[in-house]
Image 1: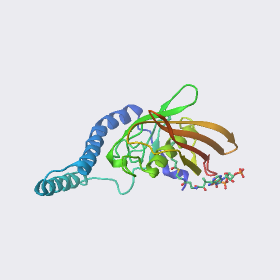
Image 2 (image 1 turned 30 degrees about the vertical axis):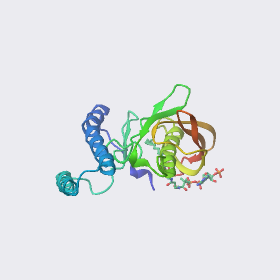
Image 3 (image 1 turned 90 degrees about the vertical axis):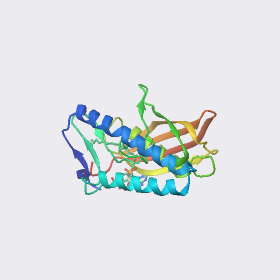
Image 4 (image 1 turned 90 degrees about the horizontal axis):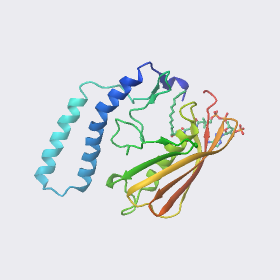
Length: 208
Ligand SMILES: CCCCCCCCCCCCCCCC(=O)SCCNC(=O)CCNC(=O)[C@H](O)C(C)(C)COP(=O)(O)OP(=O)(O)OC[C@H]1O[C@@H](n2cnc3c(N)ncnc32)[C@H](O)[C@@H]1OP(=O)(O)O
């Protein structure tokens, strides 16, 4: 990976806001489609008709598209946008998406509701999904408000008990720093308390 893949792009933040507002409802609708596909009990003919409808919608969107992934772009106002990101991508229906909130004390948190698409053991969040969400929140924590690029070096998870699907909260904070290494701790919790603890080393890469 090189710095070239983080693209400096002087699109004004107001235009990014407009595009997010345009695409968010589409991604929400696709997310709903994913949930409905898992949970529907309609008859076979309805499934086949729906498949044809969805294929027609895909063809309409593919009429004009990027050659590859959307990448990460940022402007001089320190606004970064990554439409396809697996956790926060505003155009990615696979992302919950996580909405990150930075508290004045340095804590980064996110409240999220995970449904049927994130299931691992019955009724519980998939362990890899828990790691995915925590990894992203921790990476954002380490990047200190997008003031620097950090990549996950080592990530350790301790699954204390199953995480039920439904409303959850993630919290992360920087524990300490040592040169280019940023040590971050984080938790995933339900209403009863912490279900997963994570700690990780996030590295400001040599090329950044
Ligand atoms: C301005 C722009 C704004 C835009 C702003 C957008 C921000 C938007 C935020 C998004 C947030 C995303 C959050 C998701 C985060 C991912 O998902 S990142 C994807 C997963 N991670 C990766 O792909 C990383 C792959 N690995 C690598 O690229 C390289 O191995 C690394 C980790 C960058 C390190 O390479 P390096 O810079 O050459 O490191 P190197 O000089 O060898 O070592 C530096 C120090 O780190 C230590 N170290 C190296 N590797 C490791 C390791 N794996 N574990 C622990 N320690 C290590 C070394 O021992 C060394 O320690 P000291 O000797 O200094 O004590």
